[in-house]
Length: 291
Image (cartoon, rainbow, N blue to C red; front, side):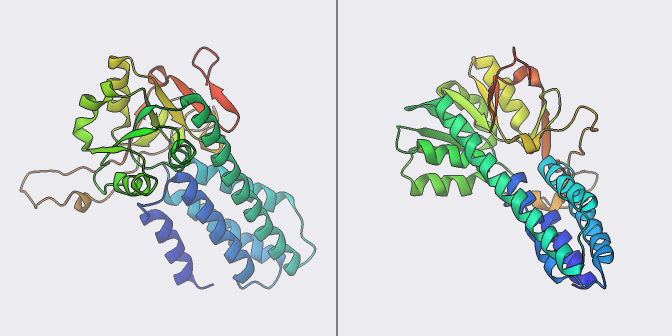
């Protein structure tokens, strides 16, 4: 693998706007597995050093997405604690560990969605914002039970369109709204359900910008606000808060107005006090139990 390919892989993760945090974490592991099999190296030590450097770069590519850091940290720890007898063994070990973590991530998403579907139950009207793989899977499980969805456009790139297309294919009655209409429609739903890119140790949720005002609107209207995401997305108590990524202003497609600064911060923080429950693969955690 050349330096050019290395940089292309980093750019792929950094610039991806269509996949969520869990999907990008699994894609990062997939890239590491491919690198383990193809990276030029004279021995196991050189291979490990090159793979660890790639893993660090991939982790830094999306600082707001904790599952990338957590899953790649686990992968690095395995690499550092295991001594492969030779180069071939080192390649096999690195690739296999990446694949095991990918499988664990997929299982966690499925189990998280199953708990979410059980909590919501049949015949519910649910509002969501952005695009979450756990939310999508929960919708799939509930699609034949009378589920109705209200989904936001999720500016600036409109991730909500992908969810609307999926729900349409499943024949789920769906209302598609602009982000600005969240406060108007939240009173019409039984619950608000969102995913998360990261969750801090105190339960604060980092998700697509717009999640915080949606949580405030839900609280004002007395509507439950549920967050469904795998434990891979939770940060440890001693982890610093992740950076809230800011993307290119060009995504907002505005003219070059003199004296006007265009901001495009992608994520916001929703305080734990606004969350009705956190749903993970381990089950439902209510505020009185602690996140």
